[in-house]
Image (cartoon, rainbow, N blue to C red; front, side, top):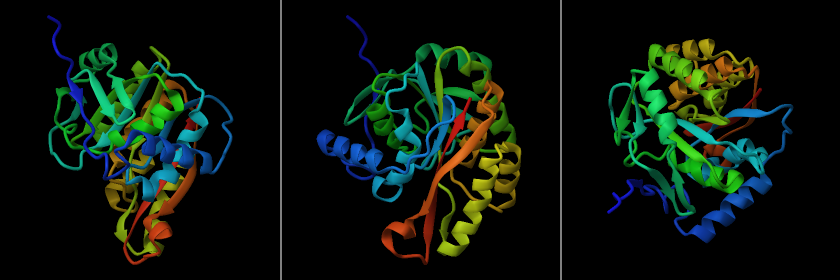
Amino acid sequence: MAAARAVRPPAVGGMFYPADPATLRRQVRKLLDAAPRKHPTGSIAGIIAPHAGYMYSGLTAAAAYAPLAGMSFDTVVVVAPSHREYFPGVSVYSGDEYQTPLGSVPIDTELRELLLASCPLVRSGEAGHREEHAVEVQLPFLQETLGSFALLPLVMGEQRREECLALGRCLGDLAGSRKTLLVASTDCSHYHAARVAVAMDQVMVEDINRFDYEQLMTDLESGTTEACGGGPTVAVMAALHRAGARRMDVVHHCTSGDITGDTRSVVGYLSARAWS
């Protein structure tokens, strides 16, 4: 008898996005159709996208995802922060599939084994994957734009400079072994007045537009800018640079205040794309 497949079920369906498949597909399609268009100037190698509820950051995420429609990747690597659990290093999901209301996405077990063999800070398990939303909310956008792909979900328990750059080196070396899309999952500043948030986020925007992940790490460490997924962003930028990407552009930025009208305490969101 074949062993049962280990499936990570949706944890935030009905909270961050609709749990009903038809409703979710309609919402994602509507966001992709409404997304601001900045046409690619080369092959897209990676993106940065926010991970809040779709009513807040969905349009910003869609601005990064919309140009992927019709493209094909063997594997999508999503690097996300851990909001609910602390653990050392980086956790790669040990199971077989990640599930959303739109269906299951298979884990790239071969790439997982290669990463585990080459990057000692990565451990296989369920830590950081059980209730974490930062990987999950990216998947319906990927399912709608790409259709079929394998997934390598990574959650960072620590975001120190050495972990971020080490993970970037490992991912950069592996990215060339197959057609891979790298995704950093992050929101920006948290709970400042809108004018403060926009100024802090602008530092991150400028670092990304210069493709300067070292400076972004420095600005995150100093508090000049904020991002809950700052470490994943640095790691993905470093990996993209190592894999041959040479340009990165922020394509959309907003705050929760732009949606709710309450500018007293907001969360910032941005999305970006990297070209090879």
